Length: 289
Image (cartoon, rainbow, N blue to C red; front, side, top):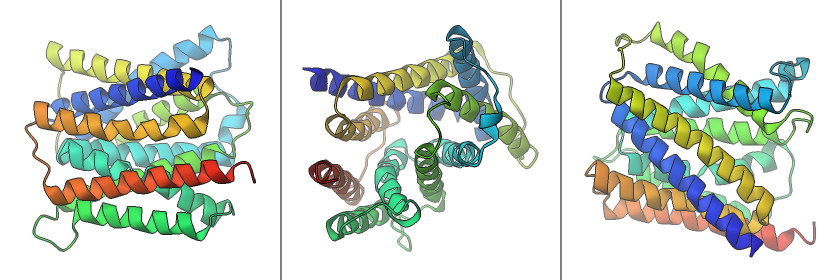
């Protein structure tokens, strides 16, 4: 029963992220990407700052200057810049399909940099999954869009974030890490504005609604993920992360009239299948570990 609750919470979290992505893409027609990132960073930092104060935790600490925390913030920054730009400039279904390769990239990074044991079966799943990414992107083909590489940059950044999180002492709470990650986006996006040809735009009431929706959905989805991991077994709950792709496909087709072709859907299916196999394999080996 607890696992089912965890699975439901994870699925709801992925729905929340898909809706957040929808708001971001809708705003992209009126706001430059750097401004979207700036308002999301400021909004998210404000919400998590209030939560930290409510829990009587410290907003700033020397521990925040440690190498793992700084590396995590860098990964979050690169991941957010890459993925938000991909959502704004490419089909949301394509960007979300590429994002599903993040767990495979984390497994790859854990083997290369954290010296975790990865057998030949999971190595094979990683290679097959990245082949699925190539099917989605199609480099060298007529359908290749260089802007889709922003999603790949997002995957690399988010993988760095997740890997560095594993080495951060537990004294630094999840709320504090999230606050720092959102806060980092503000000066970074303002720096981006110096190189952008598009100036800031005063949001209309409709845009403010979208901004509030994106921030609200993002924070709510974060809460749901934390709750899901605490309620159910990680190995049981984690596969439900891939429901985000289903929601993204629905949003893309219904809201943005996207029509993913067979090759993109095949690539997305390969990515998800490889990720699910990796999770299953890790769960099978965990008792031995």
